[in-house]
Length: 249
Image 1 (tube, one colour):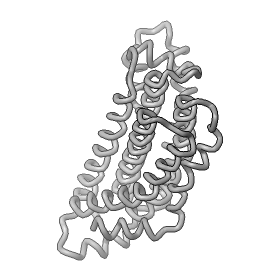
Image 2 (spheres, rainbow, N blue to C red; image 1 turned 90 degrees about the vertical axis):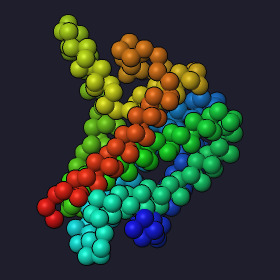
Image 3 (tube, rainbow, N blue to C red; image 1 turned 45 degrees about the vertical axis):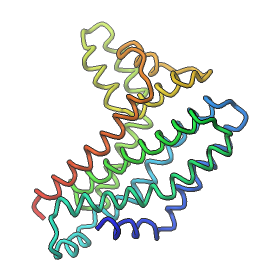
Image 4 (cartoon, helix red, strand yellow; image 1 turned 30 degrees about the vertical axis):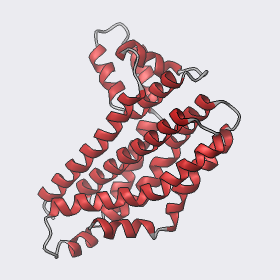
């Protein structure tokens, strides 16, 4: 099953976007310093990589007709779905990793920055592949899964910062620190960005969200954000397999 889904992703010409997107983004950050280039590239990937992952992964994983055919074979439903998710993630990672290697050359990154670039791309891929898998297993309908996926993308990657800052300002006179801390932890993508800024000492402002992270959680390193991204993606994939195995198909 893993090989089947890997081939399905690999044959999609839009997958080349994962190869070309990182170096094209990197061109806008040439000559701006290692830290600024890496954090700027990561911020760009936050806006462009998740929609591409959702568009490539969800139609495969949410296809009720395809799963009805495949489950006619002697396969355990949960294991089959998890193998499909693995195949999709591998198929997306094959073009993404060379694209990130091209970024190292374009920006002239050193070993440390190249290491964090690779982990950042891997973390984003795992997180959004897991989210696409969970939505697909939950809905088993391509349009609804894609629509909800893009709505979550807008919430987490576009509206998240303003909403958290507005929440912090609005509730500053109330003892709701736990709620605000939970809101910060719910988006590991931003925690990883703040951690990158801190680790690389990039000469750019962290913004109000970075200030809130430091105030509520203390100094965070990039490993915290990456760990939450990776474990979140794996956890969502396992949950998707469980939902798929138990739901009434």
